[in-house]
Length: 477
Image 1: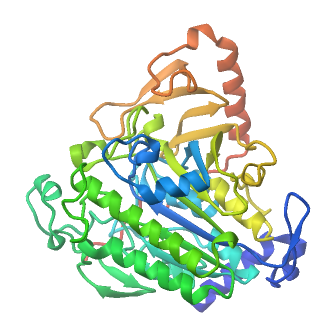
Image 2: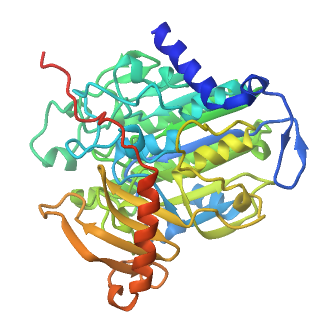
């Protein structure tokens, strides 16, 4: 293990170039876009839900799910309307967030297995530099709480990827299934049906994890971390296992939402966000903490009322339609972020670059980083630098967005029995006029399609796909 960590440290130092030595002094002054100098590095909190849909929060239009804390967070901060993830399923999406790179560059996507499983032999390559690893030289204390899903073997766990501590379930909460009848097990879930482990650092502390209390315990762990870490800059990555099926909630929230069990789950997550924000305020940290709330992909529509809603967006989890990859996103930083609704394009990969810039860290220069710097939008100094988004399913590019237009080269539902359908010429939609992707306007805009194809050519010149990390399985025991 020590040898692996040493290699990782060397790789990180090599990636940051000539400024490497200076980066180890976390107290050096920072410069904002306005030219102001500050001695304090900001804290970072990312709250990442699992399978939450674009339309599942009341501030995004849901009529029966009550999210007062997220509504307040949005009113005090920025609510993004066009914010994307790097993939439409769990593992590659999480890799994109934490590395700032499209998953095809790290090998964290596959055409054979869409995500990692308990029998997977690999995980996030040690050559990848996570956000936590890049922040460590800046003096940051780092914690991962919740769902990891980037490898459950010791060398792939959060504590070997830049996080000082970990508390959570290392993969999806519907894995390690040992009981229940067919799909009915998901519609009447019991904790004992899924023998998932709850881990602290690299040790299993509970199995099966009591998922009825998991959201509450994740929130409590997050609050303790903030209180304990308040005297140094910190990065908290809180990745909820829910509202991925099977749905579980604590007694306090069960049977309280007009939306039923799914609503109970989302409303408990909302309450947890409220506690985190209240803790930041009580500890005097709110004005020095950048908080982002979003989700890993769209709703799992296959599970009927136990799945969420993408609102007016088409399709859901697993697909490269908007419902699979456009997510709710709220950013909050009192005194820094001016309240606004942001209609610019952003992506979870951009959080990587933005947070490193805010921390005074160097973005790795020895690899392609897809994340862009959103500070102009946060500080009210300009527009988002992102005008293009690539939509991959596994290793295959299915669609691209540029500005308001989106071209589909291949389409397929997220989890249906249909086969991929290739389009030549591509289907074309104007997402401003038609966010539901109903009206193909390709025949009217051959010039737009030609521009899209040039964008794809430029993108492919930067691509060097990494070996598949998802397909290999452990030997049968």
